[in-house]
Length: 112
Length: 111
Image (tube, rainbow over all chains, first blue to last red):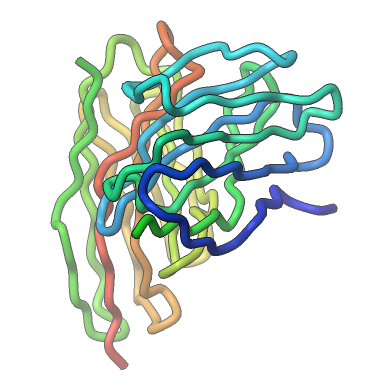
């Protein structure tokens, strides 16, 4: 049973560019959430997707956007990258209203 | 505002030396409290979910307990492989789509 998978694992972008990160949820899960984790800090909630709709959003600007596809996979897009966007981006999946949330290994984004 | 704090920030133990990690939370109605383990450069690994005060859960050398304001992760006779960052997180009844994490406790177990 494949867990949550994310791609790419590492990437380097230049300030002002755009990036797309991808996530496939654990088999059977229909809800995907995205988190940003800066070095030495806990993960911060970006947003959650269910039935291809954004259900809730954390305190992140509109430069952060997402999408969920009919097969439940998801993308996180970040526009106009800033140096401060450098972080580990984590995807988590669960069942809707479920209490067990599983994380992928993350995508390391470095903005230079 | 919903908030999670963890203490200590870092903990260094000798192998076999038992201890506890603390997670204090304020939330507008707790739906669930989670403990995760995170190894360097990896995603968080699920350990436990606790739902109500008085609940306890165990897994190998780890035991998690919950009160109305705190949770403790007790580590009994730790081994070097228990070295990791331990994250606590809460889910509120009014906003259960969002999980709020604490900053974590970095545990080092010395042989």
